[in-house]
Image (cartoon, rainbow, N blue to C red; front, side, top):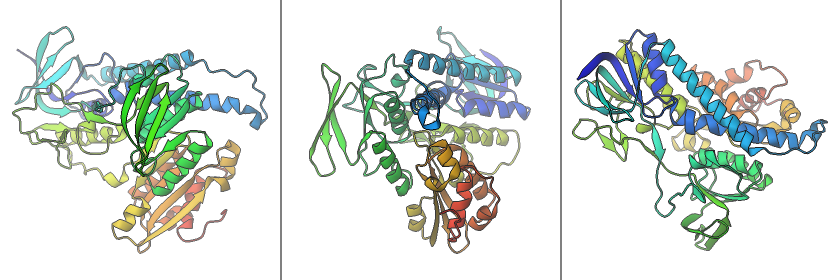
Length: 467
């Protein structure tokens, strides 16, 4: 039996879903949101971005206090209280989730706790944890159910010795040794966390370089930085089997030359493989097309069913929280009768919070050349930055990739201190169609790490001052 009618009903309360709900309410729509977790915030808020970054912050503070003497500060008997690290992480997650709940109430968004299933046309069936069901009538539906860990055959997780990205957030103790399978954002972030917490860490990547989606020079720099931190990196290596041992795990495989590889550690983190969460949505028999696990949409996030949209990790755009949020806004603005522009995917930043941080936007140098651009590059190392020296973080660089003909900024790549913050001025410059010359002529305060962007932009025209 139908209860009440909504203008839009959103299935999933992650950063795509809850942001869409708020913007919809701001535009005068009557909004409902359905979430199966007890807390709101989705993978990002509960099991991803937020808890991971809090662990990274604790690791950073621990490392900084160990080297406090370098700054003239005597800090003796520095110890890691891992139980307290986990308590702080849980506190931050709970506070963030409560903040999302508050925003739902403030914006008069109706929250249904349970799982949502399409009952087209114009209905969504909600099944509560207690088995009770109710039907929502709605004019529009947004699928924002996100993604979950994908099981990897032969590397099944047990939550103890073979763990995934969910499990490793809840550890009671720091393992003495850790093997990380995969060097994407998840892999390098957890390698950075647990190596600083004291785990002897090895990271294994199937492709020829770490962080293979980033610019090649960034990959080389992160490999150098990891060596300095005594993180062993094995690239071009395919792991084929994992066995449990008395001390933990043994993994075996082959390197790029076909030689046998055998590694042992207390724990293996499987940091590869996620898949869209479509279970129980009732897509069967609808006009919604699913290919390779992803819901197919057009540039406005419209599915094959009228008035049904999909955003975030269930569609084949980059799986990034900030992109999911903008996709949610794009959808509700259409529903509210506005005429938003499609998202420019070349201006979506990628940020990885490893140590040192990595951030990028737009084309890599190799990709720009592949697309036929006459490329000019400007690069500025943080070793030449006064502020980076003050911070004691001189690794890395800013790299600007530009088109020689029109001086258009095609991409920016940063590895080093506060990379995930300073990338944004490059995004703004690209969004406003600034040239490298204009970015280089923009006055930056001194001393800051951000002025390295100015220096790199000037470097496109061989006009860098401090290097």
